[in-house]
Image (cartoon, rainbow, N blue to C red):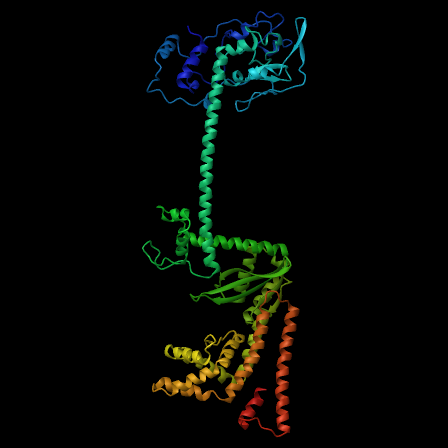
Amino acid sequence: MKRQGGTIYNYFKRNRSGLEQISSPGSPHPGTSQESPAESSLSSSPGVRVDRDDDKSQTGTITEECQAQHSPPSSVPSEEGSEASEQDDDPDPEQPEPEDVSSTAFAPSKGPSDISTSREEVPVQPHLSKYPKTLHGTSKRAFNSKWYTNNSWLEYSVSKNSCYCFACRHFSLPNAPDSAFTSDVGFSNWKKALSKEAGFKLHSRSELHINAMYAWSEFKKRKEVDQTLLNALNEKHKKKVQENRQYIKTIAEVLLLTATQNIPQRGHEESQESKNKGNFLTILDTIAKHDSFIQQRLEASGNAKYTSHNIQNEMLQTLADMVQKQIIAEVKESEVFSVMADETKDLKKKEQMSLVVRYYYNGAIHESFLCFQPAETLNAEGLSQMIVRCLERHGLDYRNNLVGQGYDGASVMSGKHSGVAAKIQSKARFAFYVHCNAHCLNLVLVDATKSVPEVVDFFALLQQLYNFISGSYVHLRWLDVQQKLYPSQQPRELQSLSDTRWACRYAACRNLRDRLPAVLKLLQDLSLEKHGERSVLARGLLSQIDLQFLGLLVTFCEVLGDAKCLSDMLQSSTLNLARAVDLVQSLKSTFHNYRNWCTSRQEKATKNKLKIPGLTDDELSRAEKLE
């Protein structure tokens, strides 16, 4: 019968990593152990003893080796089967594919705790300045760290003062017999360590050690290959992730550009054949002309282009969430804050409420838009609940940190008992309500002008002039007249009047005042044409531009100019309440100075019985009413 070690080695050479097919995990086969070559070399050494049972072990020396035959396990091929397998080098076609060495069931390792405990480790080879000596015969001998050089498998236990074989401890089969280098006590016969027929050299020539070293070598090769393959896969994965991030970043930057520039993303026709795919895809195509990677992704087949409207909306929402998180973080850091809210209609005529937070952060006052919310109900209860839910959703402590509210003057918002301001202040006691000063200024101008009929007629005529000159034919004539009268200046357009922001009517009055000669020239030319309705309208408008109209035009250029300056300053995010009060008082003083100047001029004219040239008594009386 062939020796067991040679049979395993030959079978393993043919199957590379199929040790598990001839061995199974578990306890060794019962019976007496077979004598190993390493142990037989120690049997003649005097004073050396080995015991298998822990309770019968002596002082750690080895005196004799167990001489017994080890019956082979059932999984090991028989003698005839072994010879047949050696004659036939080709494996059975129906035999399953052998597994790698990493999945082979090896014998559990033995030994003290200060040496290796698993196959994944390396041999423990401590280098001590002085190793303990033991008595061998008449002389004392000790372990030498130079032995590591020619015996890479060697590892030393400081606690046991013994050495062990790393390969045999971790890569021997479960039914392999123990030797001095795999036992619990280890090998410590330093006198025989370098002997040719004993110690390290004899152990290195044993077939069990050769098998274990071969398995250890294959295990390291497999581990290196797996690590190399894993590194290659990781590098490829990292490159793919980096490319995907770069592509998504490009799309996000294009969306951010279109959002900040307030231009639409999508087009009516976004197919490949379309000549106008919309702003988003057109900008991406322009980038792709200078970036081959972007072009490759856009032209690739599949649905991973991330250019659909759903992806656009998702990315825009993600960007909006990032901005909101930054704003909320700043508000929480500043602690106290105030809110400003107003409702308006969108293009679909749906009511929406916009919410803005005002806070002090990093040495400056910030006003940041927080969100749009659809206004399902427009009563005080519904609007106040919308504001409260928005603050709670973002984790803002409005009960203790909300110190201000700013709305328009509508009763539903500013009601003293049941308005939005009152309902929120009942929950947040420090939320002081302030009526929007810019809105107050607009209401003052509206009420003041509506009380004077001449002023109402003046602005109505101003709007009629804008409507008439905006016509296609008249507008071309208007540009021609300006080029003739003002060749060195850019043409100006008359402005339409705003019903909600009266301070902005200053631009309409200013442009008409600066281009009044061109307006009169245009109306005179059109009134002389033989074009029925257009000529009649031109004569009618020309006849209404009298001295009273000119006086009101000059007056409102001054008044609205000062009011617009105040309106712009009141809307500044850095303006505080004290500064706003000072600006309002300054405008009131300016208007009082205008009135006093007109009154003094009128009194002086009356005292000296002077009459302003070109003004009739009726016009003077109307001027007195304006004052």
